[in-house]
Image 1 (cartoon, one colour):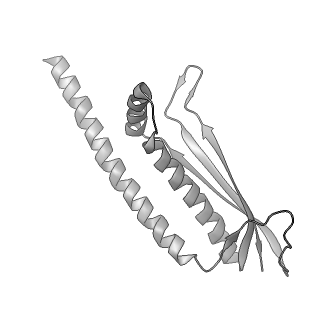
Image 2: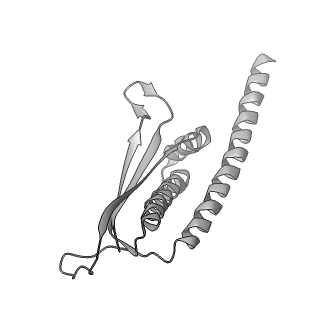
Length: 151
């Protein structure tokens, strides 16, 4: 009887975590889409080596960073997917949200400064925690977007 209770509790918590995580992820995506729409007037541009740089009165470096934790459901789902191989879409959404959020934070700071555009944007990612050695913590991803705002 005790084992049935433990399994039921595990399944209940797994379903609860999935439901709450899905809801929060959808809310974050809605927030990202709204803020992306609000910042469309400032383009993000990457210029190649042989292209002429636009004239600018002022320029400043802007950085946007975000750290997003990997939840237990995503880890459990990814572990099941690792058994058979293939795309791990639960991690893809995590990276997509992190990339878009970091770009938005960088762009928002540039807009507050008065930038007309953000040039030569780069994106870096890193993992924090996770499975390194005997550490069995959940882990997180950090996404950093940086570029030069000009006016």
